[in-house]
Image 1 (cartoon, rainbow, N blue to C red):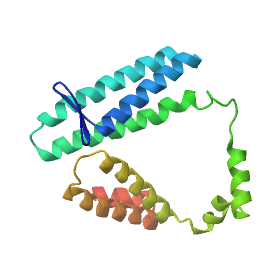
Image 2: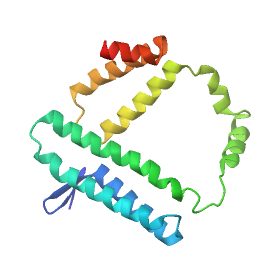
Image 3: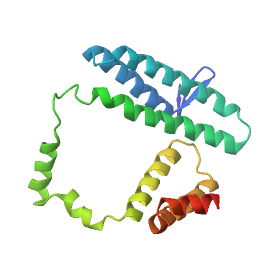
Image 4: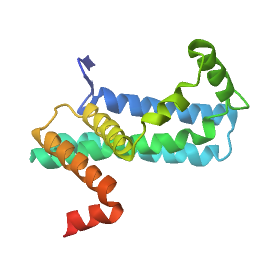
Length: 181
């Protein structure tokens, strides 16, 4: 049964993010089997194991009483699932096309803009901007997978951005000295 942002199978309640990850695992397994990619049996076995772990986390998470631990388990389960999916798709990248198609995209960008936007944007790149963008993307992905945004996430943003500022100003030793010192 589908209720808004939740899917219920008996006593198991999945959020849409869970269903999306499970659908990706299933589709990667089917593609691996259909096209017999290198290591297809291991890919299917790993996908099955990750799916079971995600289902286990979905079953355990609602039973956790403390909000912080429930939030942490939920974010960890989805973040680790996304990380696994990123690596699992590696063998499937050239299933439909036997070669990389980057040159088509580069030619299309050149045709539309008259220049390469990626190369143009390089002049605005700084270490602080790169770190900040990376952290914002990570937090966005983690927060999208949770049902509520907690007030702790705002303090996490400030902490991460502050640490990134220290890294840019003082190098990697600056973060270590600031956090441990």
